[in-house]
Image (cartoon, rainbow, N blue to C red; front, side):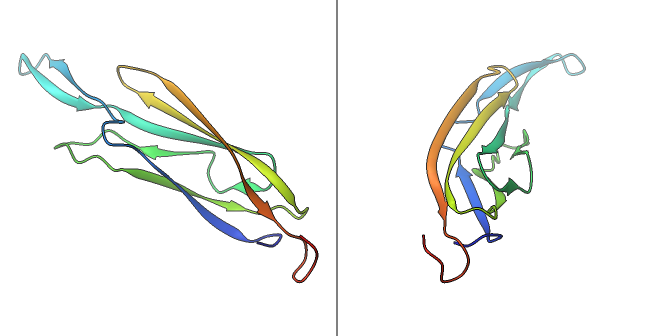
Length: 114
């Protein structure tokens, strides 16, 4: 990878990551199923992401997206960069989960040393 290269990074959610739970509907006076939204905040020590936050909104009929992605542009200085992915759940649980990876390394100019 070289300065300015663009890489797509994808986060895949495990089955059951988005909880389905009952919510009282005052119009029908019944319980309706609602699925929580999953959002990912992206942080890295070098380069830039296209979006600060991506995610999967709550959906109907049980069709839950299983992934979200973002594009990272490598910085001009070569090196190893730390990536943090923060998962936020919005609905009933309001939980956070943080994943840290040292997986993004790029080299200098084309043909330059690593």
